[in-house]
Image (cartoon, rainbow, N blue to C red; front, top):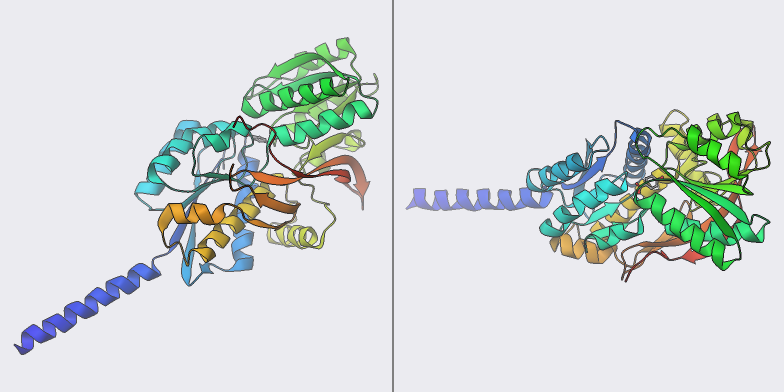
Length: 389
Ligand code: PHB
């Protein structure tokens, strides 16, 4: 009898220990990022931002330990999908995040839907992405948001005849379409639309064509990391001297590369949601801390997407007492979040799960001996114009 009681007590204790262990089990965030390949700078920026966020906000939320798992997809959609499956099934992550390119996000969307795992898109920026799964929430931006702003600004500032040059995939096609629509609405013209391959593009033949067409400006979208090559070839061909202005979305004058582009970049006007010199106390604190933690590296818009994505996840964890209620409860707690980001006020539209944010017009200028995108105008609270429903 006594042995039986002891055994019972022991089993109770064991049971309680198991329960306690479960409560203590860490909440895992799986970030899938291109850490190698053409988009490696995106992975590097987002990883640094996520680690900074955790260093500043601790690795415990609502009493639960948070663990970050970072995996390299090499920019390959099949790899991103396979990794997502492994993270959900083997590692039991509570949230997926990252996604450095549109095809990577689209390939992973079905995994989020099937496993009911919130998927925070921190980089990819084609409008359609949020419609690929009801579990997707976006903290980056859309090309439609930025391109509409430029299509309004350019014709009102003497730029009437434009050639567009975009990377030939989702975000480039959105940029081309929304820029052109707004140009036409504002009595401007797009006289030619050129598309370059995403992988290892050679801009030379396209730029030659632009030179021959002699537009007022060339409008460019290329993904983060490719802007410096466009700038270099644009200047080498003397296109600026031939009177052709360079404009685009801010991916072109990416803060990650801008300082190395040289004085030829001065005066280039772009539209975007983030600049490292956005004048706010929140941004100054972010930029200083980011540089300090990363050997002086300047954060770009990818870093901000990652930093804000982590905040959305942390807030959702807080509001669900550490993730109680699973993926659906977390997703609900992500919808409608509103807070001040280093880029300004942002809002996660509860209906579309997409980001609503300011879009700035910026001009490359020299400040304290460095090149920056200096904001000179703002369009407030821009919703994604590219939603189909
Ligand atoms: C994308 O693939 O959606 C993408 C990547 C990099 C950018 C913008 C969009 O700078």
